[in-house]
Length: 179
Image 1 (cartoon, rainbow, N blue to C red):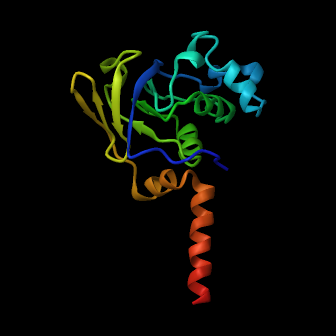
Image 2: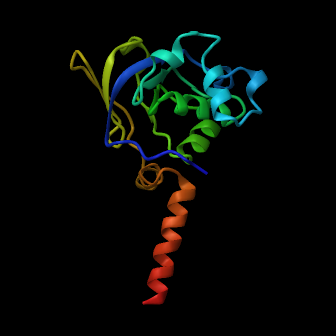
């Protein structure tokens, strides 16, 4: 169940971090923190193995960039709780591990596959991500295009997660039966 609002149509932020190929998402908080669901603790552990200033410098609306097979391994949720609570609004990568993509998309996080993204941007670059169109525009006005999410995935992300979408659909169905 997601507790995060849906993203804006266009995410205007900076590249907070770039990971290479085959990144195990558990490393965002470290394996020792993988069973924690305390958002304050997870935020404090977020990215400390890579950059001790990460949570202080990241801003709401920033994105993470990755190479191929981003998020491989076990699809644990605590790393993404930490990234969301730090302000990360989306992840753009060359490709995603299927289990990670399914789990996080259905928690309402835009995960957008765009070929060439990992080498086209640098940490700190200003970017605009139109997640519905899978379009990333850099400050230098370069536009990278990926594969847009399908209509159902868009609905899930717009609702803030699959649980919220199912509740809304159930409510609409109930209203339809009562009229």
